[in-house]
Image (cartoon, rainbow, N blue to C red; front, side, top):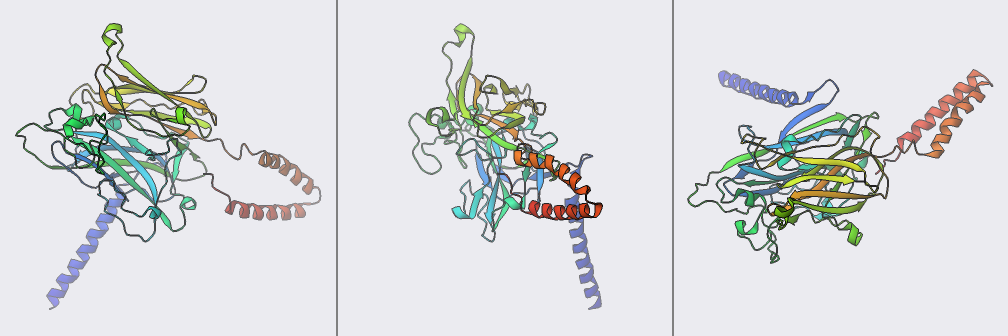
Length: 459
């Protein structure tokens, strides 16, 4: 009996020791650099694929840094079970997006691998999207595609994307994050590039994921390569399944008054605002093959859209998102000045991150602070250029910018006047004696602390 008890005690101790080691390893995964920037590597839920298969799921409540923080970057790539990066020539990363949302406390979570169907009652979830400008579909904070490995997402100092502020979370809710990962397995397919462009005939679909008939002129795009669809593969191909993950690295700093907050704005070259007055972003469009390119040696297809900017401030970062065939994109101010130009970087070989024929990166803009300004109501022009030497189906022309809005304190004439009057006031008080001055200072500080305790948060 004693020997059994001792064995049981040793087993309990071993379990607790293992738990302690696991906890230490988890903590050890958080690294901190000399500037106080923290970094953590996460894996998405498992993505199971076989040749020609499509996975386009929404994964809710994914791992993410906790607390009131300033996001500095979000980088991602597809890896296998051994952690090895996966080539775009085998699994094409159509896109991934990271979305912040608020979930009502106490409700039962849905099946997170449900193919994109929300699974919540509408009132139980509030999408905490970016600052615009599209009214539908583009709510992400971060998001890229095949270009993810060689595209910088770093937010320069002293800026940061503020998240986790408890004062911004609606009462009865908690802040969470979801990722949407759209991956297409092109191993053994009859037309890999056609599969990545989601050409409908290769998927043999006539209805969208909700069973609605596709329009007769819809050649391809997101409606044909939804979760669970199958692109055509070569006859006799052995269907070998494998498990993949989205490996994502988040960098952040603890929030402080020294951080300048930035807002995220996403523009879409299919935006209908200039014609309808509503930012109805269609997200995808087609590029027709040029019939005159050989004659004039010009195979560039250009599309433009306009959008009124809802805010004002300094641009601190910019980047475009394009699909294969994309040349580059630029955002222009109302006076024609270039706010940011972002060019496609194509692979040249067969190595991971250098896949020939695929966009493996996009150039980014980091303007000198204060050098690129946008005014409220200014009409911006987005231009996206694609090669029209061949046709391209279901392409995108998105543009991300980060904007630091002017400080409310610097633009408040009442507060500016108070700042100039207060020193004179205290100078006059000092003439009546140090004791009276000290009493006034104490009273002022107490009142100031009370006011700051109820200071509103700018939306």
